[in-house]
Image 1 (cartoon, rainbow, N blue to C red):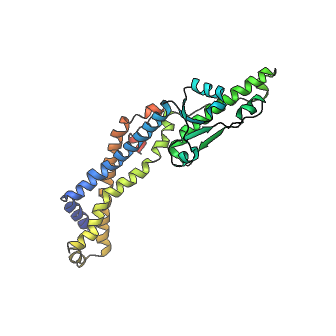
Image 2 (tube, rainbow, N blue to C red):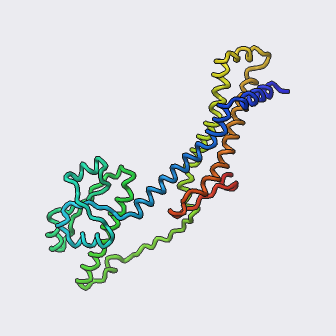
Image 3 (cartoon, rainbow, N blue to C red):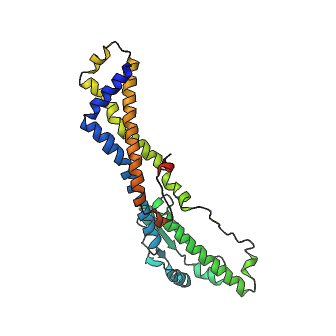
Length: 275
């Protein structure tokens, strides 16, 4: 039998008897990736649904300057709140996601038929506030388009004159293709699984041998160091692959439990997808 095979069998046999190695490979390495993946996806879904379903809470400075706008926003289900004393500071401290400021000259500009200015105070570096900001912008753009159309009609002009092109968004994505955004992070969890599965054995095969003072007796055998290292590396690789295989099985069991259909996605982790 080749020397590397003897070393390989020795490493496998010794580590199969070691509870710490078995725990690291077949419990920690197998379950850590799926548990982290499921927890992260569950958090993303929970936050997305919470922000999408609950009414938009919009702090407004100078609400008395635009009563028609405030009434329209309330009709759209927006909850108008009193703005903090220092809106900019509240945004910087992340106490608020967005604050609408209506300047005092808004009413005068409105009566004269000029473009009235609104200030949307935001911090676009806040990822968690991005959805709230987009909802506020869509509402204000909708109000802007409605008022523009009414002003044109009053002047006897069809709104289609200033909007010669209508862009229809024909979305060809499927629930499976949209799930690619979630599965894009899967390789990183698999790399973590491989590392956790083979890390303890790799450490024990080098530093562990030295601590047990068994490395020197192993090296004085009439076998090349390349053969010894090959046997140890192949054993480490075998444990890492075993951890990866079990982790893929765990992923295939965990992913059907994730409520991704609530956000219009379907995640499958069968043999075909894993291949």
